[in-house]
Structures are given as structure tokens and as C-alpha cells.
Length: 139
Image (cartoon, rainbow, N blue to C red; front, side, top):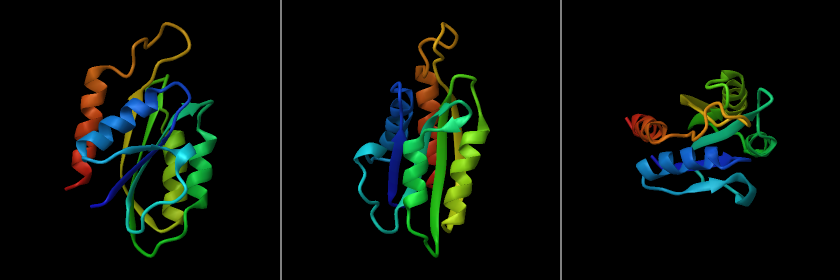
């Protein structure tokens, strides 16, 4: 497996989850803003925060710009103040599948909201779960 972890974040929460995933896989996490291309044959692990029930525009543009593949693997993850909005992850998954990727996993982590609810997220246990999710992808 040649993992390529890419994320879009506004608050930094998704970056923390991306880094936990990348760390477990002994690779680096890449902010979508700095990604020009993806190494051929990469296992793409794409994530975003959820903003108004949607993934960040940066990750969506990135995924839409990927070339079609005959055979590829991918996974998606998201952070959400409401604790789990699979709508954003489903949209990322659909784009990847349309490009020829087999999406083999998804992960949702609670994110901090703008108020006091979920303050301090992601917590250490969320980062640990993200790492376990990453390791499950390599099986």
C-alpha cells in the first residue's frame, strides 16, 4: 500500500485527524492547498471538515480533478461538529468511485463546534481511533 493522506481544514481539527492517520501509516499528511499531484498508484485517503453539511470546497475540487483510474483504492474521513454527518463523506466517496476507486473505508470524528459543545475535539481517544482506522485499511 502506498498511502497518500490529503485533507482540507478550516479550524485545524481535520489536520489533527489526518496526521493521526498518516502517523499510523508511517507517511505524511498533505494539506490539499499544497498538493499539485498524487503519485501514481497511491491509496488515497481524503478528508475534510464538514461545513453546512458539505465537505470543504478544496477537497471536493481536488477529488474532482483526479484522473480516472482503472483500479485504485481510497478511503474518506471527516470531522463534524454534529459528530457524524455522513453526507459529506458520501459525496467524497461518490466522486472517488466515479473516478474508478474502490472506497474501502470511512471514518467520522466529532469536531469542535463554534460554541462550547464538543470543546477540545478531537480528543486523544479520537486520534487513537483514527490511527486504528488507518491500520485497518492496510489489511
